[in-house]
Amino acid sequence: MKAVVITDNEEPIDLVELPVPEIKEGNCLIRLKAAALNRRDQWIREGMYPGIKHGTVLGSDGCGLVEDGPKQWVGKSVIINPNVDWGDDLNAQSAEYSVLGMPTNGTLAEYISIPSHRIHEKPPHLSDEEAAALPLAGLTAYRATIKKGAVGKGTNVLVTGAGGGVSQFAIAFAVASGADVYVTSGSDQKIQRAVNQGAKAGFNYKNDRWFKGTLAVGGFDTIVDSAGGDQMNNYLKIIKPGGRIVMYGSTTGHPQKLDVFRLFWSQAQIVGSTMGNDEEFVEMIEWVKNHKIKPTIDKVYTEEDYIAAFDRFKDTEAFGKIILKFRTN
Ligand SMILES: NC(=O)c1ccc[n+]([C@@H]2O[C@H](COP(=O)([O-])OP(=O)(O)OC[C@H]3O[C@@H](n4cnc5c(N)ncnc54)[C@H](OP(=O)(O)O)[C@@H]3O)[C@@H](O)[C@H]2O)c1
Image: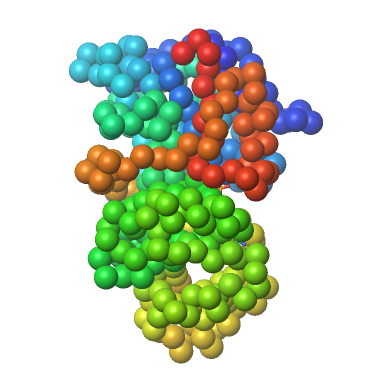
């Protein structure tokens, strides 16, 4: 089968031929109809991820057809929970935890063999590409926004970086919860797209004074962010007293300094969030089905364009999830 693996070559990602994986007892062999890329795959390509194991098939997200395994699954269209060994504590992952696609072989391949307890039926209202876009980003957004962010009817929420793969789900979940949703983006076009999807308004973070524009909102109960960096001090200016700033990433790095005075005086909480437990994965799928949420697909690539698919992360035009498909599937 064809697969995209990480190597120690000058261009570290490579499209290679590998044997179709053998299935162990309790595993399913899945012919992948579509896989989605995450920023994590690009971090691995750039060598900015802990414990990189060369030769690993990349990719955490996939949707496919079960070809072999326990008979109740054979012939079913499924999506894959990317958690590996979350553990028993619902609050935090175990020390053994990892995400599918490093160090375990992932979804950027024609086939994957995966324990059957990792798979769930594809939500019927989604295409293969849309379903592939859901797992990692949907799970991260669900925990950060609905669970840790406590976003719901009557709350004002700011989701930063509207064009991001995860933030599109944070926006969709927050809108579905009945919250008043606002966004930031580096692009006015992306703000308009978020407004078309139910956000009330947006603010362009490329304008240094963007946070002044939010004053009319009257403060945010929750801010959901993955940019980090010095914007954190702006978030402390616009969070309501006692509000929550939920952070699941640090795309722009660490803040050079943090206004600790504003932090304690505002009674705000800065809350970390990573992925989500397996119960939240099930809840997230139910949420998507009940609210008929449809992931936004940025672009679909086929395997010969795998480099271009990864390069899309460097393109500020991107909006939504990047999909990779193998022609044979
Ligand atoms: N902890 C976890 O479990 C977890 C899970 C998934 C992702 N992450 C991390 O979360 C981050 C986002 O992941 P992703 O897959 O959504 O990546 P992505 O699709 O590449 O999105 C990144 C977004 O960051 C936004 N951005 C860039 N500079 C910004 C700034 N100064 N202020 C606000 N937003 C800014 C951009 O928004 P615009 O395009 O709208 O300008 C961009 O779309 C990454 O760092 C990733 O590693 C963590």
